[in-house]
Length: 386
Image (cartoon, rainbow, N blue to C red):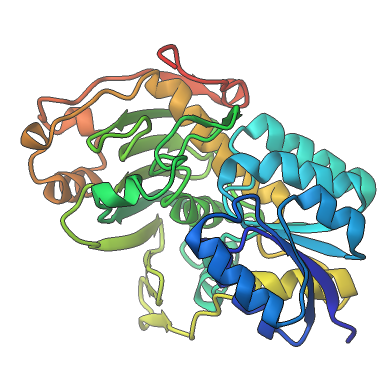
């Protein structure tokens, strides 16, 4: 199979991962890279490496695409640029693999989907959990009805991020950057992977679920503009979603998903899925996880050896819709002091176990919010205190 001629935008941070993969992959030919911050030390170091490979380096995506012949572009920039870069690449007739989230605003994601459809192009999103083999096996089991009717989906992400993490770049934790929506909170950045898996496992249909209505709470403890604690309760139609995420723990504790049905239940994490069905032996899916599956899947779709993307834009917009709806429901992101926070891990664990909102857990900082309907989700354009 002829390698797909690919350009990369963004070569530091997460871009460093994509850079190494694109350079080493036998089914991909890396023909050019671009990064708009050549003066940054990480970018300068990566630039020297890339030049050593004989690959040209540019400081502007559009200059690069005017100069080189490519079929596909991998976008690994800060996420404010995902929408304009993806839409621009589609306008030029190029396939795209974009880092998560596909876009910040669901309204932009819908534009991406329509453009890709009109031009018959693929847009994959690097939501890597969706490509893990144990995720795919669990989804197949759910679609087959082995768990019966779905009842509850409970996702919990408890991670540790330091103050230094949020000062590592000038867009981290911001609502807007370079005149673009950024919304770099725990939901749009870290938790979007698990939220996507929650929606993936939240329906017996092949596609992802999307909430018909939801209620969300968001809080901020670090000195940032967005949330670092969030919870969402949503009606997925077939099941109720209970989702909890934070970066305020003292260590990374868990990234877990529980799927509860009328005939059994499954527990998922990033390494395996364990299924217990009434009257049957326990099933364990523990295949090695392929972090690169999303990339190779896009290549195979471009070359026609596969028909379906693992994380297409048309499905990956659903986490964005959900997060936009969460902002609409929350209405604001109240500050919480570290002194008032308490044992956030214990609070989150208890809330998930009891399937309660954080405001129902007796914490002094809890704020009751409003339920919003699906029709409101794509209208998110910021909060009143922006």
